[in-house]
Length: 351
Image (cartoon, rainbow, N blue to C red; front, side, top):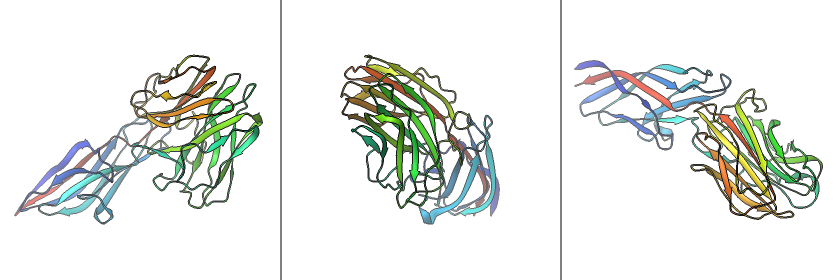
């Protein structure tokens, strides 16, 4: 038998997820591969060190539960390339396939609550606070995580800024809720808030949004973005995972957006736009993911929310019909852990 120390895979990006992994290699007939080392390297992140953890998980063929064999974590270190090296002893015999998948990589937007639409905070009658019903978090949402909340409210005079309180009837309430960005005209306001949740909510929680005075109507919702930087046990802000926040407003323009140049190539953006005085529809930035495009009456208001991943320069939307005034607020959020680059080394044994 002959033995040879070789690089069995990479360096190359692991593009697949755990559900759809990347094939690393297939062992030829009459050979055995003994994997001895995994080296994982990821891109730098803009933001605080230690705010993201990306992983590469390896195993046989499809990475179903029975096929998982090993995982390597990489913790962000700010503006440097973080890496990790794992020493292992994983044999693969002839015709077996080694597969790898990335976990904790920014891949998709997850609406935060099971069984409902993206709109959670709604109210069409004059009130100073609006409460959600009891809700449970979607099983697909990763935790711990930061929860991002968008809020739009109307008033005959300048609308008040919102605040959100949690009534704990569930097992994992959101904490550290604070405002990231807000912009108001004389009758309309758009706001981004965010909080922290350590574990998945399974039994229901009530959230109440309150204002300093009576609002004509309110519409808002919550979401989590897989793989974004984590402000652990803290309010997401421009001092940790929020890279920047930009706002804009106007009157009858149908092209609505913000002036924002991305700070990082590994980031995403959330944009909320709203127009009062019209029931219409938005068209989002090219390549964006639409979270919601909806309307509210009394007064007529059109609201839309978009995710841009990766971030775009000056994200802009188009409204089908003009209203009387509009607001836009966009936040850039640091992402970490990806793309993940993997090198697999080991011993090749021939019969």
